[in-house]
Length: 236
Image (cartoon, rainbow, N blue to C red; front, side, top):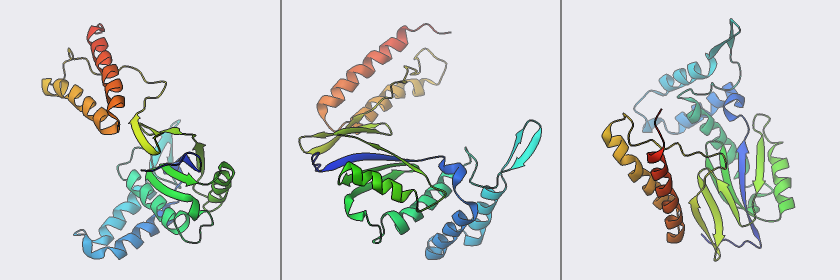
């Protein structure tokens, strides 16, 4: 998509400790509102879904130093239901606050994309306005705290490095500085089909995430070297 690095900024936002901070009752209310709007789209009775959601949120126990505790806020990390409930709560906040017409900063939000608690906006405004927006955003909901990173002409987001190239946004694979070569060795005892398909999947990922052929070749050569390195690594 077109991108003017002189007037626009790449921004990433992160919701701090989302799973453990979402309010239980408010999250259930959001789930109830959604079911009421889409009651004819589900074969499962809404009451059954709400009952299971209530159990998933309000009956999380954990043990610490031989004592049992009941989690009274948020949902437990690792729970199968947790990502769905957290996404519903944040989605409701986005619609009613962030992307609502009453948002005084709405005109600056050119793009707003989110994956669970990681958000990628394109900001059409100054850096000072972006910082003011985050200050305002963190005052709108006591359970959601956003942190922000502002890039210049490139910024990592999840496993992508998004950057400006000739007036448009391009993507390539991003690896964290702490990344290690832990690819599965072909000499392992995993099923042969898995060992043979692993390189195929890795190269397809590069092809999908790299919008420029030159970037794909660069990362494909690096991946080939990593695969060969793993083959020469002694097994334990």
